[in-house]
Length: 340
Image 1 (tube, rainbow, N blue to C red):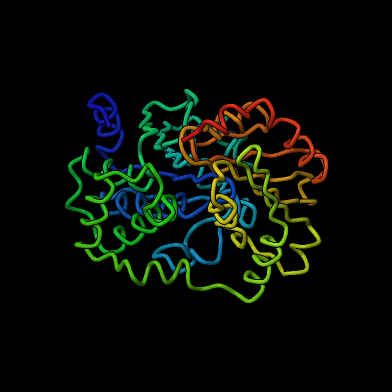
Image 2 (image 1 turned 60 degrees about the vertical axis):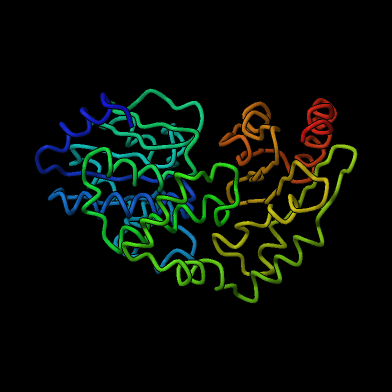
């Protein structure tokens, strides 16, 4: 975080404020972990801080310290509106365009609060008085750690904050195996463990709580795996019926796309998940090497993210979305075949 941004934030926080902390729609481990970590920090700094999420988050995150006090907008609309109406400062974490906040977007767009963005995705919008954006960072949770350091508040790091931030970093780096995991990331992780983050139990709480339904759904996903060797591409489909048959819950498909990416010689992987309630097909895209799924998602599927991990959506049927996807691949054949 540069000195100018640090100075602006320091001035905003130099006296007790009412603060709202917002995560993106369909919050993941990094969104939840970073928001809770920042909330616990701000409370120690004598601010009134509340976390608001547009909708619910996966069950495997609901053991995190403080998660029971998160306000879910779709479940507690009036409470979330009340928090935002009185907020002096609004932090937006793990997203950089207000439309990523789902139904909170109109409320945020009309707010007169001072906005602070902390995010690691590409192409941030210009809506905040202070923007801490760094696409080289592993996660927003790692950025919250550096945010604390820049404000000279690292001494306020507690076991709970360490646990929250560790969880966010771990989940957004695929347990520290993605390319954005740097030596600095590992130094941060080491400090979080020193402060009290129990890495073994955190991993167990997140990854070793599979239901029978989720494992059977994974079996269906793997059965639906298709390989396109001429494009070094693999994709998985899951229909709404398949989700319903396995009692799908939010977060159940987390990580499924990585199985497609793990196939030998595959550098590009996508999972297509039908959502009839929203009339969309949700897509998660992953890649290895230099092939940018961020650019691919932005160009074709109203999405984006990082070079090697992005999301998108289609309003066409599942069958038409997959057919369209396959029809696009020839334009990227050279990039896919020659990618390292």
